[in-house]
Amino acid sequence: MDVRDIIKEENLVYRKSPLLLDKVFSYCPGCGHGTVHRLIMEVIEELGIQSETIGVAPVGCSVLAYEFINVDFLQAPHGRAPAVATGVKRVLPDKYVFTYQGDGDLAAIGTSETIHACNRGEHITIIFINNGIYGMTGGQMAPTTLPGMVSSTSPYGRNVESMGNPIRITELVAQLPGTYYVTRQAVHKPANVRRAKKAILKAFENQKLKRGLSFVEIVSNCNSGWKMTPVQANKWLEENMLAYYPLGDIKVDGELVKK
Amino acid sequence: MSRELRLMKGNEAIAEAAIRAGADAYFGYPITPQSEVLEYLMTEKPEGRTGMVVLQAESELGAINMVFGAASVGKRVMTSSSSPGISLFQEGLSYISGAELPCLIVNVVRGGPGLGTIQPSQADYFQATKGGGHGDYHLLVLAPASVQEMCDFVPLGFQLAFRYRNPVMILTDGLIGQMMEKVELFDQQPRATEFDQSWVATGKTADRQRNVITSLDLDPAHMEKHNHDLIEKYRKMQAEVRCEEFLTADAEYLLVAYGSSARVCQKTVQLAREKGLKVGLLRPITLYPYPSKVLNDLAGQVKGMLSVEMNAGQMVEDVRLSVNGKVPVEHFGRLGGMVHSPNEVLAALEQKIVNR
Image 1 (cartoon, rainbow over the protein chains, first blue to last red):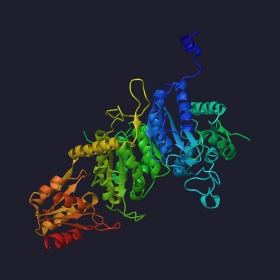
Image 2: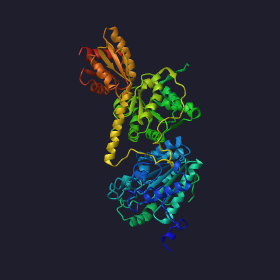
Image 3: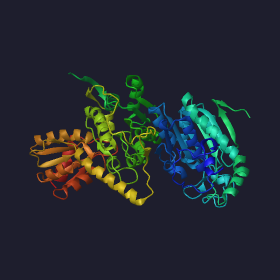
Image 4: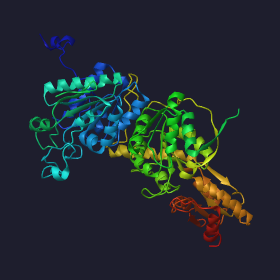
């Protein structure tokens, strides 16, 4: 048996989604962004909705997301993606509209846009990447930075007395009647990647129902911002981030999940 | 064919004109003295009349970014606000200008700075005509002087916005916004807009590359080219200069005023002529592009000009640039929500220009 016998359609176990372009990611090796980009493109491919999908990414590491993915895309001002997505969805109610936002973007400067898009129950999908830091600008403290965590603007660790506590905005938006599906996932292990993909799939499928907003938080690492190796970062994520940001569904089909 | 006549507030005329001009969407946030625009639209239920979407946003930041979204998919979209709210629009307007999206913005100007006053003012001239937000860009600015023009400049504004893929601002003020006048309404136009749709981001189909709406380019050489392309577009916009001359043919002195102030100055011209002073009025209708050539030509004929604005002297800079030192140019105007009377303008003209 030679290579040509092996490379056959029936032996295919994995291929890159054609919706991911061949451009090399600008993300740091080991970062979760690349994995989440792949999951979203696989979901769009599997649902067959490329021609009906419009993505919105504001400022952050993913500001250049449109360089890597083959869907129509809008680059919004910092924090404003949920308002931009509202504008698209209100005039094109049958299209699939998603935002892709980081924690500084969604939970600090864009809090108002986030809360009100969720509260109005816009029939869109929000993908929220929470790595507890401002990655693009070089590792400053984010609204989600953990207590005691060191960043370039909390060099002696986040002092919650003076800097406030990290915000669990996902639990917060789950309380709003406009959200239909709210979940927190991660992509640091293969099992988590599979669960995250199912969540993203559900969040996109929900748009057909027009029953409200679907919100998927992905707890991710920022190994360069955290000053760790990718392996150390994933270990630190599991031991620290997940303790503060526990994984799992928070609201499903419009009902809060009882713990 | 006789058209429909109504007695309307300027703000109501803008709102009715938006529906009739075939606007696809309006996103806005309440602020005095322009809240009637949103109130009128909500009362009229344009969703039922034409399918037009109307939504009250959580803030001016929300509203302008909803405009960004709807404009990105090629829809005819507008918003309105008044000065403090327009300051909040500026972030979005910079992005919209950078991404070259068509849309219509209405500024019913009130006095400032800060929360200022809810009374009429023209203190946002700089903000409207010189860019307003960060970066090198311009809005195309229309300045109505009547409720009729409030109505007529809505379809004109949409037409120009799509012609140049550029935001257009209707710069009016609390006086015209609140004032009631007779207005002749144009007939309902279809919502379908005819324009080059190759750039719209409505979902990537098999027959084209993906469309990306962005104002970002990290390559400085590309960004410089984009800046030059914008400059070239603004140069082409010079073809849209509009202005109105009132008794300028034999004028020895010229008043330059737009919007409400121009209405006051018409009366001043009559009062001056009753006294034997040959005064004319130039009313810029587009504030960007500015009618510089017309003013420069008139500078060869008159002995001096007075720029009459309800502000501390903003447009006077453009008048002086246009005239380029040929004749004296001075400024007069009441501030803080006060509106000058025709006699005050005449007295200022005599003191600052005629008897200087």
